[in-house]
Amino acid sequence: MSGLMQKYKESLKNTPGPVRLQDLPPMVIDYRGLLEYAKKKGVHPGMLSEKEKMSFILKENTPQAI
Image 1 (cartoon, rainbow, N blue to C red):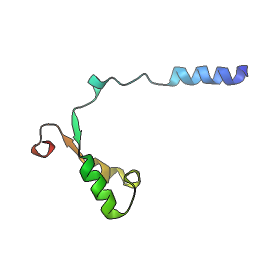
Image 2: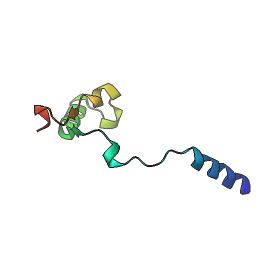
Image 3: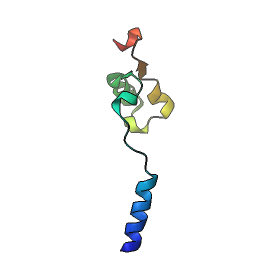
């Protein structure tokens, strides 16, 4: 058991700390649009490609974000 505990403690040393909310860039996500798009494609939203999902992330200052 001590071997497992040692591996666990080593993994904790390599694990990055939490990300603070203030450190994240401001953005707005169009969840409704994302869900409608996935439904039209007939897939679960998690199955969409990263490029497809990124198209629903809007900058905070754009007119679309309102």
